[in-house]
Amino acid sequence: MENKPKVYYITQFATAFCWGSIFPVYVLYFRNYDLNLFQIALMAAIFEASILIFELPTGLVADIYGRKISLVLSNAVLFIGGLIFLSFPSLIGFIFGEIIIGLGDTLKSGAFEAWIFDSLKYEGKEKKTKFVFSQGKRYQTSGRLIGMILGGYIGFWNIRFVWYPYVFGFLVTFLFLLFAMREEYWQKGEEKKGVFRQIKDTVNKSLKVVRCEKMVFALIFLGLFFSFSFETISQFWQVHFSENLSVATSYFGWIVAGASLLVILLVNKITKFTEKFRRETTLLIILKIGFFISLMIIAFTKSPFIAIIFFILLQAFEGFSEPIFLDIFNRHIPSEQRATLLSFQSMTGSAGEVLAGLCIGVFALRFGLRLTFGLGSLVLISGLVVFCLLILKVKKP
Image 1: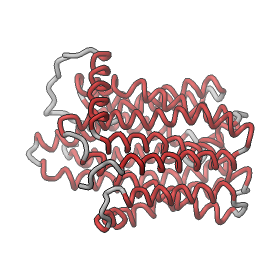
Image 2 (image 1 turned 120 degrees about the horizontal axis):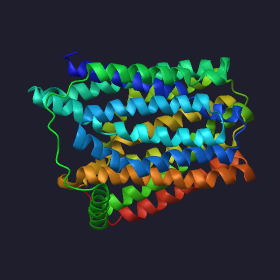
Image 3 (image 1 turned 60 degrees about the vertical axis):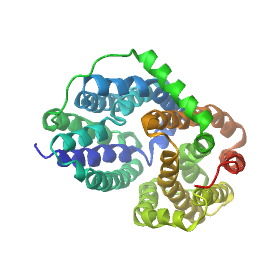
């Protein structure tokens, strides 16, 4: 297939479909095999820890040996990870599966976008990259929506089958990329730095910028606290809705799909509102406060309808705030260190989720899910207060 954007669109749709098919009910899959709340949170911590460990080394695979090798390997590893979840449904099997899937996820991270950008540049079509990325996002969102709706119904029908679309989808995508993806522009890079030296240089450069740029430090700090807070609801909303509010699992896919549609329809309009405020961070703070209020309501309402409405709003607030956060973050990063700082920021978010996974499982077992969501709200509002104090010292742009 000569049309590179077409390969990009199909792959974005297929991989998003695979992830979407397990997203609405994967926690209930764990519950079906008698994992307690601490063990469920531990799974998330292990997944995020594997991303922390593998992200930079796997980035070198794409840079040194080629983006196609990295992407093909990613889909093969993700396929194997799904097979482990299907074949070894036990705590040990799930732990091993989370590590393998974390490895597969990092193999794709950044490599796919780098491939399509460099391919279009090689063909003299560099001006089309913005359109291709935009279209790719639409295909990705469509695949995720279809996958989530299907996954919700499969979970309602038979929870043991939820990994089948994931496994089959990544197998097909692996074969598709193996034969359809071309990388004519590629020339093997020199292995100038070892993995550990590369990691050391990345961390040192990142810390230097963080120390000098107060806004960068404030945003990384907020990201750490928000990741912890978001993990409380991300890990346990399915259990809460199913066991505490008696919401049928067949609705789960539609609930998440509703939030995704809200983001698709409104994200551009919401983002434009940043221009109406004197401070670049004002709208970001408002959206985080909306997230905080939604999480508090979900924590303590006894109405399934109200919980669903505010869960959709919570997911939407998170989706609206992401592009604003990234825009502010990028505008305060020196161009020569942009990739380094984005990697560091991503790793910090993963660190927050690892920390949450280690804490909230124990807290949920002892105090229940409602107070666990309350803990997440408290952590977020504390982070917001400190964030506001930090940015008061930053000069207005």
